[in-house]
Length: 311
Image (cartoon, rainbow, N blue to C red):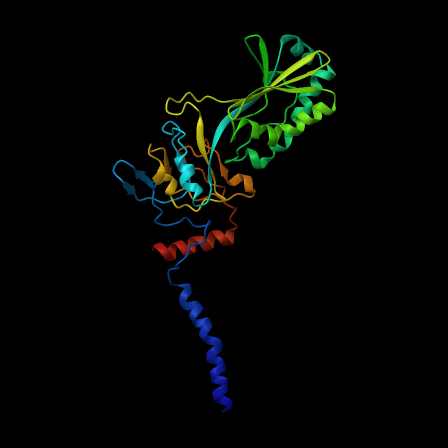
């Protein structure tokens, strides 16, 4: 009886070891992503032909936006609103501070009052200068300004200091002000500056007049013009991959062949804003996140698994 019990215990001990050794030399069913590439991944995009009512097979990964074909009709946004609300329509904006030649001369001379206005606005938007917003997919790459006269350009009789290092994508001009400029304008008012809204053409543009001690600045938030004949509004879709379920209904809804879905699936981000892809980020090119470093053990293990899988 005691001997039979020992044999049973030995079998229970060896059985999982035997099973593990047997599976070690079998082709694995899974891949060790991202150390191993995904096999049999389609190279074609998922796309839909609205005229023929035919969907062409392809992998439903990152969206591809052809801006020259997009008309800003918002049908992709409408289709997504019933699923995940991942797509929203945005404008391209530029933020500029305008002033005349006299004020420009005072800035060059280091007049503290003139520089105060620029410093106050720049300091209140400097948090947008974080790495999160500067990485691929960022929507608001504003730069923290220094008094650099190389950034000043002359247009007719006015001098302009551009605040954004790249195009700023937002749903409307007044929302951009509330999210990123309201703090700076409020601080200027607290320092004795007069801040007056003199032009409100939201959602496309707004302008503020900022005055103190005979100095006048004009803060303008205006819509960029990409000069596209199909989309004179410069109104494009933006995708939040923190919400997207990759259903492809937005592609099916586009009647102008402007939207597809690509095999690009490496869309991870360390910060939530990094999952928001603006229209420029959705340009037709492969964009992938940087793979983590591979130590020698992982490299050998990945090589060994590939040998088992494919040979």
